[in-house]
Image (tube, rainbow, N blue to C red; front, side, top):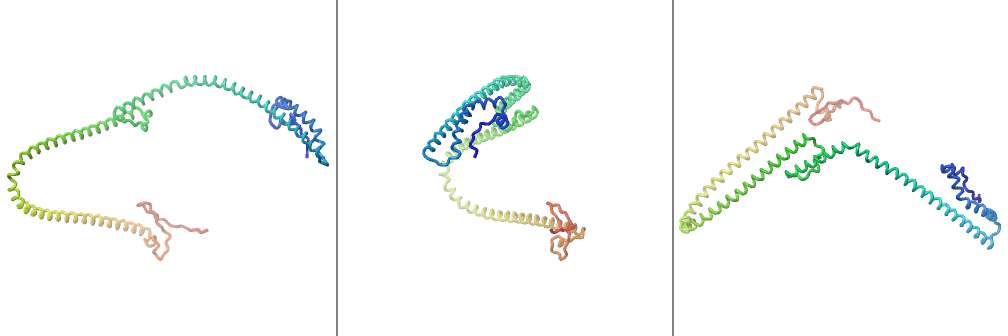
Length: 315
């Protein structure tokens, strides 16, 4: 086992970590005291390389030497911490310098960008102003939800057409609602007038009802007889109408079914004639023929294609 501790040479440090020669020299120099301490301790360490007998005195000496190495290691840690603190401070200073220049450049970029985008900004402001004006016009006619209308992207021609159409529709709807409301109000007023007229008539008629009650009772029997005749006649008429309706429904359904059957027969004949024109039978296509046919049909909706199998390969 190699028991000698060697500080990394400047050349190896440069090759391993790609640092500048001057930086490598400074780093090695910073750990010079640690290197000197290790060099002294290593002279005592060689005595422990081939210990033949370990006793209490040897153990005590080993502990003393180990603690000296610990002190050297913690000293190296302190040097490492101090160097890194300086590097960190220098790194922060570099960042600060970068930020100073970056801020100066950013301010100039911002100013130049404002000049560069001057006319674009004016155009965007015009579009925003036009969009706000359009929103207000739509709100004025009752349209509140405009998030999916893309008002800022509409040309004047498209906007004029949309606005005119929307306004006309709302005007028509408002007129219809107003007409319906007026009609309902008139109906309520007419009903109130009619109710008042009926109330007055009922008041006058009440006097006559008492005197006419007997005549009404006598007339009720005649009325009942007459009503029975009317009901009988009505039932007969209803039966006649129902039969006529049933006959018509049956006739319509039969005509429809006959038409569908005729159409299906026409299509089947046309299909068979088409196959026959190509010397093929439906049985050959359906696979019900005793003869194996190389032909087959592909259907695409109402379109039929007659195809022929040229050759089959089984692998």
